[in-house]
Length: 180
Image 1: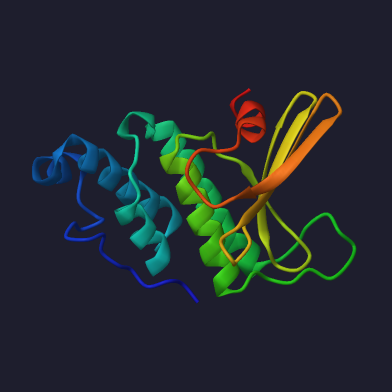
Image 2: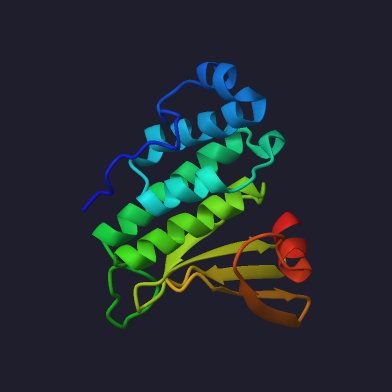
């Protein structure tokens, strides 16, 4: 089941960046333009994902077309994982339910608006959508749990750290690996 199309506050998510900018200023125009790009490439976002975009402050300077494209690809991947659940495991894999899909959309949008490079998605056996970043000997992952607490782990040169993230600034060990 595809999420229904929703509007972002008073703005039509299909508005062009230029049209939106004339109504809400440059910051709002860039963010609205990013939402329109994501919508056109990844399909409809859930109500909760659009509400998150409307409520979160964004750094418009980090919303490059390349970054938006990379996240649109990952948002689209969520629907592929839902339609054809598969991973590296030989055990049965559950398709992500709506709560898990919404959590993954929310997590990706939070990362996008923070200007974090797009991860690669994976599906855990229980249907949880997770993300990972790999750079040389460094690896980081984040599970988009439906409760909104996103468990993460980071390993670099044999040192492993972990915790949870609910938004805001990424923990330093996680950010160091992702930004590498």
